[in-house]
Image (cartoon, rainbow, N blue to C red):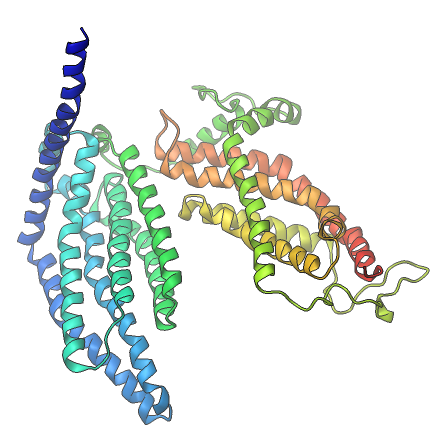
Length: 513
């Protein structure tokens, strides 16, 4: 028995390898078919070849003209620097334009097959959904990436022959990496769009939600390249890797060939959407939605039954957001250690006369804007709603990034207080916690539920479509936001206006150590 078990253990890796090779073979069949179809279409190959052959020369000429313009108009000393900084930027442009065609090809991947009546034979092939999705993805990326790499090679040769400038190796590597990752992000998103639309026109209309964020990212990368901030580009590449993984996971989870075949037309009904919203609002969190909407629950059932269930269901996002908030404070403190300010900034020794307390209490500072409850309340509400909106286009990351700035500044100030010799804990208790005990939990709750709102696009709950999962996450977010977050924000605004300024001024004018 032991010998037989040993033979089975030796044969298992071989069987796994054979399965992997068979899966790769099936995927390559679909990938080769996709590449052949792209090469046969002159409307795709023609513009790609023209851009690959002509655009590197145009970009190099434009860079030299910009440098000559700098010479003619009085910045001759900086002309060489301008040219040197424009060349890495030109590499980014040359690499990006050919991969933009990958978006067009990817948008036509499944919906174009439907319009050509070739979708059903493709979906009937003996291949799994994941293999079909990855094969289509690879087939779409091959031609634009090859054209992009070829254009970069031509541009580098042109620079070698016409200028004395040598492009830094790190810039070349980063441009190649960023180009590949941007193509992967665009193609991953476009394939998901193509699989969930019923016409090429609808897919092209949705393309703006993909190309506009990538174009904005390209502008940010161009600024970083122009100023030589190559180390920041590694962070951008890391973010693109995370976005690519998220989109790939979402695509493989949402792709289903039966749904593609069954989808005949897209229908949007406000009445059915509102009915679904009411059903999701009435149902207890975690339970299957009823066929008919239940009566809307009152405030007592919402606070007694719905909210405790939601907090248990969202325990992981809450823990993640809490850890992120603590990390933001630590990051701000670390920045204070690296960039110390004057030690007397929070240690004035003797308070100015206009800060001294009077018989009627602490004065109102003319330097600061007048604090109002409505102004603070509306500002905090707008920021949290903006974070929820950004989470929809960033898979939840936007809601976290909006927490980074205020908490990072708070940690930075606490670190400066510590460097000045004063107690940072007392600073936090006097300047932050009088209103922070209500505002921080509100921000954590809103950000955690907004995080799940964005994550529902990547991984909707089992048994629910993408739209149904998004609607359910929106209902849960609104429940917590209306029932818990808004009351806490109102209470925090009242405390921030009437209590925090008094305690902060008391701490500021207290005797120095």
